Length: 106
Figure 1 (cartoon, rainbow, N blue to C red):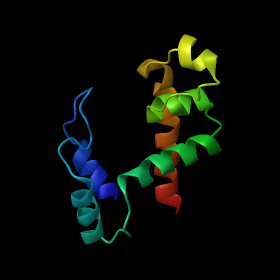
Figure 2: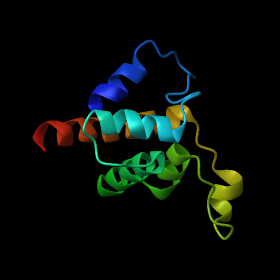
Figure 3: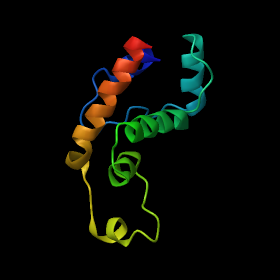
Figure 4: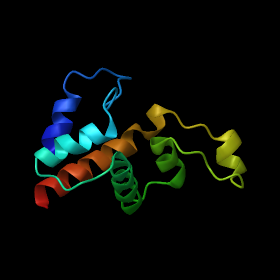
């Protein structure tokens, strides 16, 4: 998986989409050829959310990273608090570092 993701990230500019124009089935097939177990793109989102939760990221930050809306009862984060890319950059870098560590250490 790391090889596939590294190859996909080469030459990306700010605002580019990592999987633009790539179907979920195609990505899963590429990973399978590299020896990865079958997975769905949503599994990568789940992995990011799980690692972020274990690292203590707030629900608001995780929702922004995953582009989820807060529950209707959460008026504060639904209407008033607006987190942007810069607000979650450091948290996302922490998750990235942890994923790299997990990949190295197993």
